[in-house]
Length: 92
Image (cartoon, rainbow, N blue to C red; front, side, top):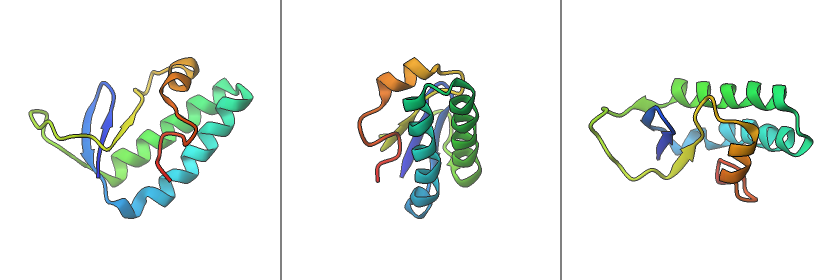
């Protein structure tokens, strides 16, 4: 699966990591629903860090279709709310 982190680039990520990432996604959704800004910021950073850790960066000049798009690290809670569907960031 190809994942794009807005403002950074793309990484190739094995589908086997989706369950692990879904845990962070669920936590992020809960914090957004509660309006927990500090928790949201912490969990978004953890999610992005995990994608970077588990994924293999694609070359900057590569432009593959992204199956998943994650917000930039500095995205606000309101910006991420606009990106989300009912399913969260990670398809389950």
